[in-house]
Figure 1 (cartoon, helix red, strand yellow):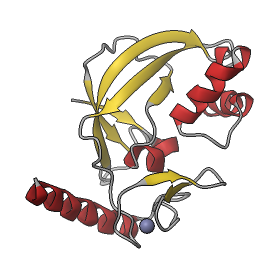
Figure 2 (cartoon, helix red, strand yellow; figure 1 turned 90 degrees about the vertical axis):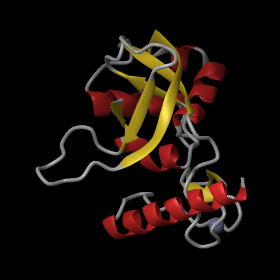
Figure 3 (cartoon, helix red, strand yellow; figure 1 turned 180 degrees about the vertical axis):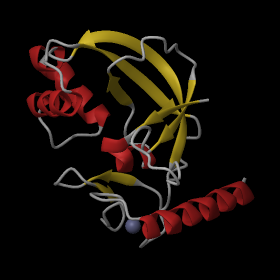
Figure 4 (tube, protein in one colour; figure 1 turned 45 degrees about the vertical axis):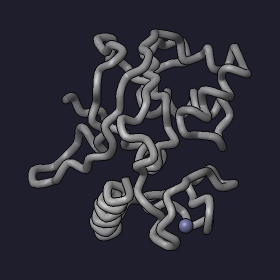
Amino acid sequence: MRNISFMLTWPQALAQLKTVTRRVGWEFLRPGDLLQQVEKGMGLKKGDKITRGHVISTLEVSREQLSVLIDEPAYGRAEVDREGFPHFSPEQFVEMFCRTHNCKPEKTITRIWFAYDRPGNAPACLSCLKSSWTYNALGQVACSHCSRVFPGAPSFNEEVNTLFTRLAENHQKLQRALK
Ligand SMILES: [Zn+2]
């Protein structure tokens, strides 16, 4: 399975809130293709471990200009939410994309719409152990029950990551036991 990196939206991806991603390249992708979410694809130093997230299933692949998000405001708003940036305007999203990918708003990118292979499998909140995520007023991923900000927003710390993986595994075991 091919890895796909979600470095800029790792909490949104782990919380299963993000369902659309825009990429430079990736034209070869087809509906039905399974992908492994990873935190970092490139820039791993020797000895760094790959941090894996969820397996996702490709629903739709299309090519469009980034600037469509600005030209069609209703579409832009919905898409920026699906991208995991509810606190950004479409203009801000396009600006951020251009800065991080060194391109212009006229750039034609690949839009990938995807589903989580195991929905409802997001890690549990470290405070209340429930697994229901939303966004707070700052646009951070936060627990819908106790408002605790998702670990990894804004910086993912190794110790929390390990704890979190363990909690997620326990959560999965519990879910399996309940079935
Ligand atoms: Zn909570």
